[in-house]
Length: 344
Image 1: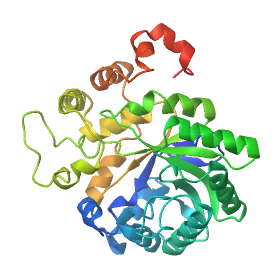
Image 2: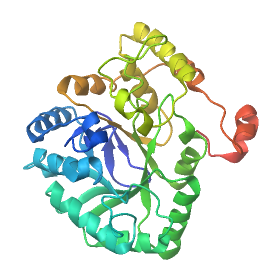
Image 3: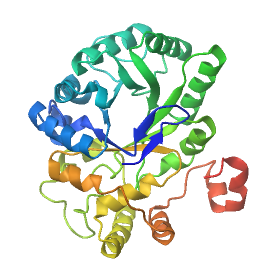
């Protein structure tokens, strides 16, 4: 396994991390993802650690906290062998203090996560959404206090817009508070909006990408083909509307190239899609999920080899989309791009 710096920090993370969204199985959305129990989770943790996958990502909203509980049970007795990453800020209940990133909410969320995970510290704690109703200074001060108390090691954000992340980083610098070093983002061959603003921001500010849904919400598994219905067992039947939108024609164009490269390399479609992501600027780690050992083994096959430059160029072209204003002029006129963003 390759290990990389998480942004401009001293934390080394594996190129692939394990996403525990399939653990727990509570609720309509997450039960469609998976219902892995503690015994099954221990087996997946065993396989991950043997392969060098040492970071495990979850969130308080995954299965109403059951994902954290199952993960905590699965790592019992080996906490010092791994990194724990979790998130909070999204609503976990109907009450006025069950959502957001205010001081009291964050303290409560961290204490709850520590209890469910069975640990005394969280290695990477991320805000699951930007709270527009709470001053960023309050948010950052609360997080800084939790870092100083030893309950959190490193901070990150998730799904922030560029201005939200930059405002937070500037406030942290202005007040001498702990900075975000990670941004958990959606990024895939069929979802490349991250590249237009957030990637240059990450390069400029030292914020590493922690990539979620690298297979385009289950669309790049190798089971979806042009002119064919969704496989009967696909979770997209139940979850498609909850995930990132993907243009079908673009999806099929990308899958066609992935199929060609699979024949050339002897690798699977998802392994190629993951390997492409691992070569992208700012990407510190790519989160992979699995409902069983076979799926996990397939995902682990994405490391230890590299696509060549010509193969990467074919994938780049297949997945390319024209960005929105104000980025498209520079996209169409590459010479001008040198003026608008750090080199990628």
